[in-house]
Image (cartoon, rainbow, N blue to C red; front, top):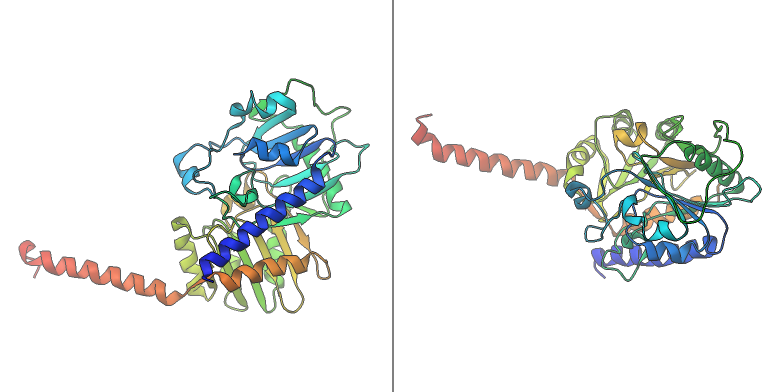
Amino acid sequence: MSKPTELTSLSCEDAARHRAQLREMFSGRPNCVVGAFCLADESLLRELVTDALYLNLASNNHQAKDRIASSPDRRAKLKGPAQLKDGLAGDAAMVRAYPNHHAKYWLSGLFEEETPLGALFSGDLTPSALDPASAEANSHELLLVLDSAEALELRSFVRWLMTAKPRTEVLPRRELLLSGSLPKPPTFRKLLLTNPNKSLKREVLALIASARDTLDVTVWAVDSDHEVFAKLMAAAKRVRVRLLAHEEPANRRALEELAQAGAEIRFCPGMHAKVWLADRATAPSAVVASANLLADGFEEGYELGVRLEPGDPRLSAVASFVAGREAAARLWAPSSVLAEKAVRSLQQLDQVVRVAPRLKLF
């Protein structure tokens, strides 16, 4: 089996398993909230959540050409909240859109008298993440079921977020508004966030510093002009850093820098989960989050994650996810980067030599 086929098989198997798991967890459960960046398939969402639904999305322009080009669902029709007015929202859902809402979460039991159930799922509400039969089913996603304390904090985060005024709001035909007094600003001890407290950045930096042998990172998008990237570069000089990245031209410059610092770069087309895993083979700990390796991912908008301490039983699934993709992904060696630069330089030199006599440069 070729490596691309192996990666495709892994992503399709995950899409089927995650769809079944989300259906089992949330279908028929009361007062569900789903947080995502974008939505492409209303029927898929309605299969998984059959009761009252609150949907929190990003107000970013999902139809922009650059947004579509960098999406796992390039051929899917990503929908803005206004397009849901006569469909999902008109049925039994409240759709709210917030600037740079990139957090990915599933919650049932929104109200205080209910027992919450929660999960972090790296995928959006799109065929690539949840439809194994779709031609778009090629994104690699991770689903993490939250423990009871984390689920309570997720509910606090969602209720806090929903007191903020969204940029766009589409109300359903039947009322699904929060009742009772507005919640106080919550205190988070388990969940990691970009806003309101920048704890996600602090914990990722702490995890990088704690690595003694290895540091595995999976990411969809990466840029280099921020503190987290600088610390990862420094870590590559003292521990074995292995990065699994989606193969996207916009990522190349930053990946070159990491490779030249000593990191092992592997391309995994469709890698969409965001994992930081320290000391996988000895004393693993991890951060699983929604934020890309971007300056905005740690400073702006809404991102969400959780830290898994040594001994957490969920670490085995996280390590297995990373190891399986690592074994199948293509290694991008620094020598190939240097070779590409050398070829370009020779081509430019050859062009100069050809035109120089006409320009009387020699």
